[in-house]
Amino acid sequence: MWAEGFFACAVLGAGAWAGWRFFTSGYLPQPFLYDLNYPLMGLYDTAYWANHAGAYGPGRSIYPPLSFVFLRLVTRGACYALGPAAGRRCDGSAAWAMLGVYFLNILLVYRAFRPQGRAAALCRTTAVCLGLPMLYGLECANLIIVSFTVFVLAFGAVVRWAPPRWLALGLAINFKPYLMVVWLPSILGRRWRWLAGTVVATGLVYLLTWALQGSGSPGNLGGDLLLYAIVISHNAWSDVYYATSYWPLIHLMTGPSRLFGLVTAGQAGAWVSLLTLLIRGAQIGVAACLVAGARRPAAIDTRRFCAMILALVLTTLAPGQSGYVQIFVFFLVFLEPWRRPLQIAVLLATYLLCIPADHILLRLIHGPAWSYLGGREVTADFGLSVGQLIRPGLLLIVQYGLIALNLRDVVGPPPRAAPEPA
Image (cartoon, rainbow, N blue to C red):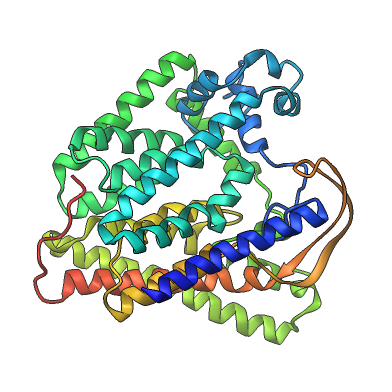
């Protein structure tokens, strides 16, 4: 237990250090947002389209209508006549609503972790709710904060009756459609009641919010998603800034800059081969779990499989910044007991990924900038950092650990009754 307490204190200490840096320098240091004028704009950019027509035209949204319906309920439409930035200046109710949801998350997460023991629940709640992914999402005011609320209700031991949990997952998927991957373990495990309930709930939420929004048909969403896939252009520096996968770093090493001159062509080639091997190994490991799970569905631990599938998306498929999405994986991982070496290793790597601190190795941004949170002009420093090099590796440790745990479940001796999501 002392180890969990130590790492929870490390998360708190790093957060306090970031707060001290903000007080003295006027901005949050790396690994927080390097665009110092962007905080909260994830909320207000979306809120603008919630209060104007064209979310699936000029707005090119790739998300279902629930986000816009929700934001109309918590924003002041008149504030957005002159654009999202004007909304941020005028509409304090939206930010307060997001902050209220964040504090609700703290209570729900603690309740979900409480079966692990009071001390463990406190440490794990600290890591999840005061850790880097959640704070980064809060700084952006991304609706992942709201999606996480209902995700906890779906997978935590907060609600016992199945139908509300089906509805909660349906809401989470309508906020963040990539969460549909959590259906795969239910399909493999033949949990048809849970699967049917969540699919129906997802569909009903979508149909209702589509009707309320008046747009957001499957054709709208498909067209915007196709356009997004065609025209999206990734920026090497932006992608690597808070990446969960080594792919952005690989692209940076194989590009003209050769990791800003830090590696030779030969070194870059060796690193690319090693990192690609690790990524492919994770994909093969998950494929093996899926095959074994399909042959022995009763042995599947649904939550553990969901964590593995979500981690796979982040470690091997995500092309750019996606760090705050880790909160879904971390929540599921922290439901693991502190019991065996493999579980402990996964939990320790997750704690390390929650620490909101970094060290710049090569300064790439240095100069004056307007800090929205600080409310003044500051001199900002951001660059290639230790965290950008090791965080994807730590997440791969979590990924490989989850692969091993799931293989043990579906290949090893018959387990005790696997936890059911409903």
